[in-house]
Length: 182
Image 1 (cartoon, one colour):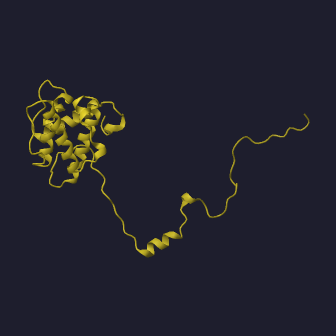
Image 2 (spheres, one colour):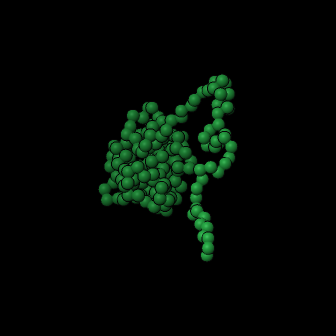
Image 3 (cartoon, rainbow, N blue to C red):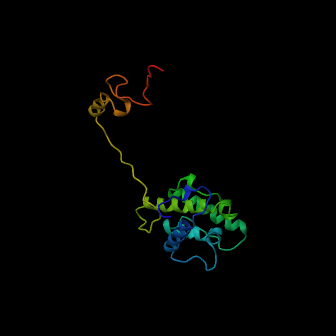
């Protein structure tokens, strides 16, 4: 469902977003996911994730482990996470290694990939493609001392009226009926 953030449905996988993340990764690294392997299995050894980081930030991961035991593959995931942090992805957007390795929470893996896609907007050396919406930029404003003082005299509408409190104009509830002669 386009436009719906990955984290909106906590812990539930959103296939459309996984497909979008997969297409983005394939475009960036210039190769397709292995034939016949599902999304999480293709990412599980961390090789594709490391290739992705090295395309976004060349040389950020010196050695990608392509063979060896589980420890070597988990090291790829750890290297990817460290590179993401250096690239500008917030810690709260990173998945835990076990989320991917043990397939505990694949939606968090997708969330991290989307966060990485958003972080790529902030790197002018990266010419695209991007993933997800462009993050908002700071719009800092500077006010003179005179402008700040002028604002002190204004009572905002959120603060109410400066005419005094009264109940004029209020009408709620049923009117009172007085029945005579009963």
